[in-house]
Image (cartoon, rainbow, N blue to C red; front, side, top):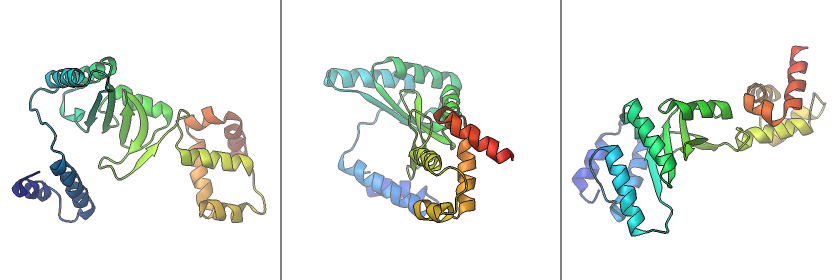
Amino acid sequence: MTKSADKDWLEALVWPEQTERLDLVRAAAGIVAQTPPTLTAGDAMAEIRAAVARARKAAPKATIVVSSPAVLVYLDPAEREKFASYCTRANVRWISLDGRRVIPRIGDAADERGIEGDFVLSLDGVPIASVDPLGRQVTVYGESGLSPEEVDVIEFERENWGPTRSKESLVRKVWNLPLVRYYQRLYGIMESAAARRYDPILVRSFAETSEL
């Protein structure tokens, strides 16, 4: 990115109407130009081992981080599993952003935790967030498998359970939503396995009321 021709070529890969994406590319190129990384071409499995070894030799006490954003999709399934297995046993922190089914076991774990979306951010092979593939949005899920907003909705409903005369105005004040939209959001949360784990009593009460 220190050569204008290289930067122009990279920008030419962005569709004309994707102005927001072009801004991201330019910002990233600016960072790379200021601190050029070391680039090594080669087989992913062979080079990751060598790169970790070099980093460990250069900084024996440092925490080594392996980042593989949208990389594994370009490997065949067997190589993806080898890469993931290496990263989870190599005494490194592994951060990866992948399509939901690129590594099936991570996708399955995301399902179990109630993490939505087509792209998942994982740490050491454990899904922790739903993400936009271009970094425009991140929704972090806690140990419960619920996003902070979903937890807030459940806690709000727990404190204000049932139809009350003041609920519509309260929902508008807290959530800036009409009551119908709020209940649509609540229904979606209450149907998840994560919500059943978080507050089974409230979910059961909600289901019983909905069946009336």
